[in-house]
Amino acid sequence: MVITEKKHRLPKEFYRGEISVAVTLCLKGNAAAGFNLCDSVLVNTFSDILSSVVTKTDCIVPVYCFMPDHQHLIITGTSRDSDILKSIIRYKQKTGFWMSANKPEISWQKDFYDHVIKTNEDIAAQVRYILDNPVRKGLVLSWQEYPFKGAIGCKIEDVLDGIITL
Image 1 (cartoon, one colour):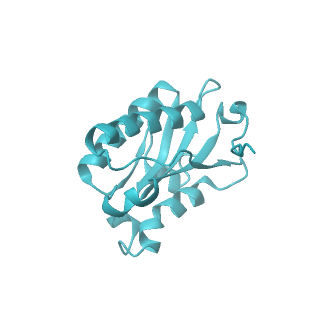
Image 2 (spheres, helix red, strand yellow):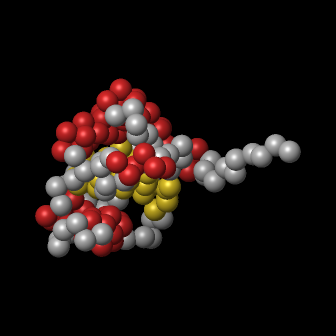
Image 3 (spheres, one colour):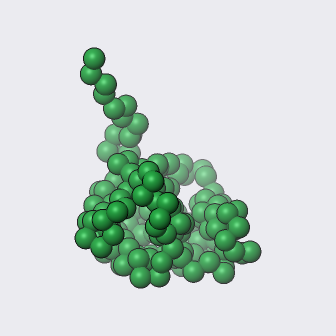
């Protein structure tokens, strides 16, 4: 009997254009136990990789947040030609290559979790939910204190204040 993997990914066209997608990337299995994504060198390196990738695919990142064993981010397309799925895949490949060269004991899980944010959903609420992750985990008292978060192509505060709507 052949066991096939269930495909849960939406068709590629659902990831194109001026849309937003919330993504969660998790470290693989027990490798995460001895490693922490909340390291300033890693966060700076991965943020630079993310910036390079989204710029090339006409996207911005209203929020990203590194947690000890996973990462949350929202990627938003800024044009009809934006390709969010390509951004996610390239980011995961490039950071995965970095991990294999620098931290071979860890890697990303094969897949990732995603949620296409509907146009009627409140993007500021989605961003705040991600920012509050370290608070819910007891790492800080307020999201502003958490050092391993950021945005690319916009300011978090502008999204939260409704100045930037996506």
